Image (cartoon, rainbow, N blue to C red; front, side):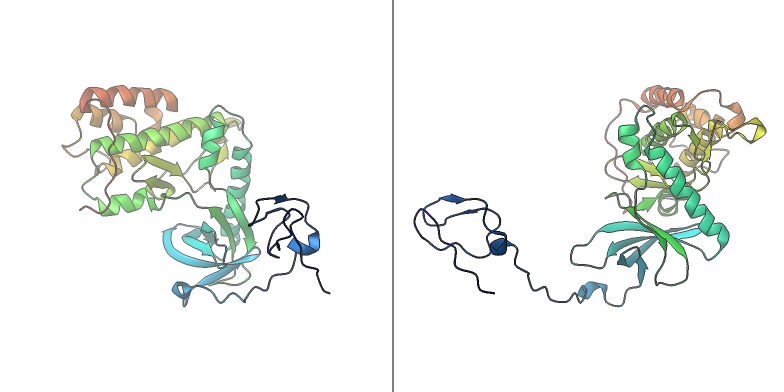
Length: 316
């Protein structure tokens, strides 16, 4: 099929065949619109994708419609391993992939997590516009087409900067982070838990390995949602939000270098007593927002006015 050359109707100059549905004449500036489809919708020869040189030799998994190159392992739990990954394609996408272990229990845990996340994202509880965006958001899920083992997996959208768990912070800073840093970490946890509880759920597994931190931007987000439960169940099986709040206090004690019964001297005594008293769920009578308000006032009294205190993981 031959295509007649297209000319500008104003100055008769040729119009390049790679123009789109509209074009501007390079010679006189005349604007052409509504160009014929045969002019702009020509097939383009695309060379085969051979992959990036930097990805050669790296493990890959097939999930959904794409192959994914596995990067650093972020965590390993009772039911799964979690990796940074990116799509093996010209137009790539960075994700976090959770690969379940080869067991029916692990596959069921992953399915529970996906159902819980879907229900939380549909919540209209106050703060949903912000906190729902912090939840892991699936971009692919299902059985692996190929990979290190036959398993189910889920690829979640990656939030830039959230690449360290608080378990890693504890390992790299065994003497504890600065008190101001520990305070903003606990504030972020309490804020997210306030929304989760308001949406009707209890996380049920707040722990160092289930919290990702953004060292620069004072961010902490919860992951590991497979044990989350509806908080309005009946009888003794109904989970209590106090379990999450006590666990968050224990996380704060750990990242500050404490051992569960005491904290380092760098933590003001009044702040230390407040934190340790809230590691026992039975002693908590407040909700997450009330605890956060108490923490803000106590931190101001013992540490002074708040200021930006980034977490430096490359030290110590």
